Image (cartoon, rainbow, N blue to C red):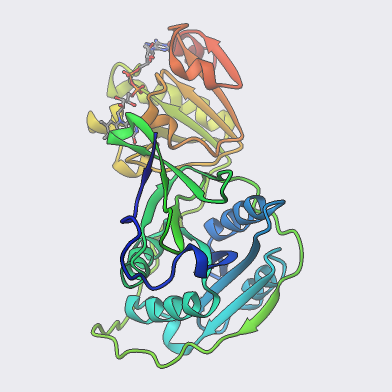
Length: 335
Ligand SMILES: Cc1cc2nc3c(=O)[nH]c(=O)nc-3n(C[C@H](O)[C@H](O)[C@H](O)COP(=O)(O)OP(=O)(O)OC[C@H]3O[C@@H](n4cnc5c(N)ncnc54)[C@H](O)[C@@H]3O)c2cc1C
């Protein structure tokens, strides 16, 4: 079933399908010294969608003067062009200023599609751009494709992950989708982009005065190897048994929601729809059933090795290496 995320035509809307340029615009978000990894993933997604479909691609970067590392990433991003909205006032993320620049960019370029990383900043900006443009936003997409008419089909879990909804924006433009980190692999740069300094037009006076911002201590660094513990773990003391496996394989221990609900792990360790999306080189799941909600968080994993005693467990059907075995017996091999 495909549903529509914006009101049908028949009203005056700022610009519609007929007034849009066949352009996929990607918001390139600054992060630490370079670009946020989600921006790299979205560049790859934009290039794949555009290929053979007559679309052009472009990026928009809003920030202070980019560092040398960020500039290199922007130049080599493989999008046709990157529009730079640079201003010292963009050094801090002040929503009203960023929204004004993004809206200005949309007004000038009139893209058909806008892709935004579902970072806290992206999640705030996308709806703020959508409201004045009277278009829709599909949040937290797990899949993007173009249909025969060139409409963006935005797939995301709905009703608690019970079904995957396919959502379209038939008339209003741009079609805006936010995407969580770790969904699209292969953000490798594929060519040189033209950097175009842009004029942000007069910026509003912000209502909020930010004095200082502190980066989160984890820095959001992603592990290459993850060991995910599931509901099969019988007691909190047993977690120690699996730590040895994690140490030997150099993996970070994470879990399904079952163990967060039991209070054995913090929410930040939870993988899935209401937890984190991960994209490790190897994910080993121990006694995880493979609910749709859990699976929504592991789409980006390059290889999955799943251990489960039940041959009918859904995760075994999706795993590259399905192993029907007892996790306690397996853990004992490491001692
Ligand atoms: C709105 C909503 C959002 C949700 N978000 C998430 C989310 O983000 N992440 C998430 O994980 N869940 C989420 N859930 C919960 C989800 O539906 C499942 O309940 C949960 O994923 C089950 O976790 P599990 O597979 O680890 O545990 P269980 O369902 O308890 O499965 C345990 C598995 O271990 C196997 N097993 C048992 N003993 C052994 C053994 N000794 N050796 C090997 N295998 C064994 C069993 O065969 C079974 O397959 C959400 C639910 C809702 C409604």
